[in-house]
Length: 92
Length: 217
Length: 87
Image 1 (spheres, each protein chain N blue to C red):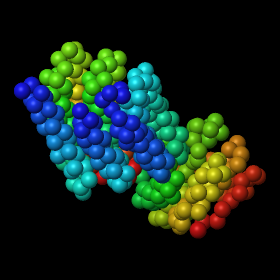
Image 2 (cartoon, each protein chain N blue to C red):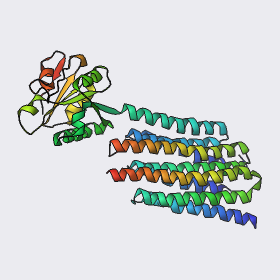
Image 3 (cartoon, chains in turn green, brown, yellow):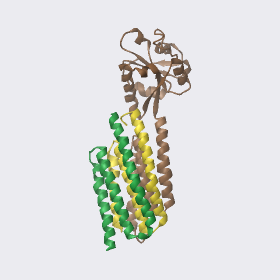
Image 4 (cartoon, each protein chain N blue to C red):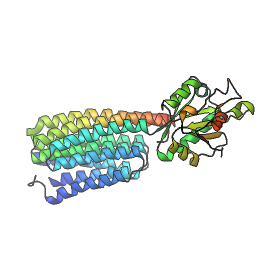
């Protein structure tokens, strides 16, 4: 039961990764790509972490630390990248 | 490691490293190369961790990627630049010719990934001192023709770096621009053309020793 | 468990290809951000697979500190673009 739950979480995370990364190859604007990428990376990585946490609960401090830093940093980084790239667009 | 991963799996992941390195090598813009270098650092950290060298992975991520990238971008930002000294009055109220000239200069040095930085100075003495002290790479002032012949402003640009002079001479064909190579900045004479219209940069520079005048194209 | 790592490598290849193709520096930065996250998660997965606390710690540190370089780079590039548009 737990085995399938953890594998399902990891598979879901990997699906999110692929789903959010494929727009990078298209010809859309930076902000569109950033949106899909931040959603995919954050949610996908969270799902993978939760899957690992279910699989091996012994290493929970590491995984929880990684989970929180991922959550905070990816949000801040998305904001900073959006701010920096949109300033250039205003300028042009 | 061996019970969960076969050699084949490790080999596939390790192959990412030469791939990323080749990507760095084939970038021609230095800033793009720096970003791709960050990618290489991330991949390298993954490979080192995979092979069991966690300390090397940490060093690569912190020193190689973070510190290296930060220092390189700061160094590139301050070195890949053409600093052009001008009088503050030009910057305060730029003529159309001055704007076009800056645009020409930008376009001329863009293939070499240089930026143009216009540095304003209060008067000609400060401008000349900056040129002598190698604070700027060149100065750009109005030449005498501006004051004499009506609306079209002509500018004379004196560069003290011969390579920059070669690049710009090959790239720029502007009738309002007079490009001069000043090998010895001490001998360049700068006079404010507004205050003294009959005695200005270009003509003085042509006559003084050590300067190689270049006809406007 | 190897299928996880295989899929992660495949997912890392996509932004690498994107960084290769795209000439806009912000698209390259996006690819860099994506790769940085993906590789550090892969490091944590490896640490769990191998049951190695040290590697897991390194993965967490890389995940939390590695992004700082990206932000620094983004700030400097923004300043660069303001003074000289077109880069």
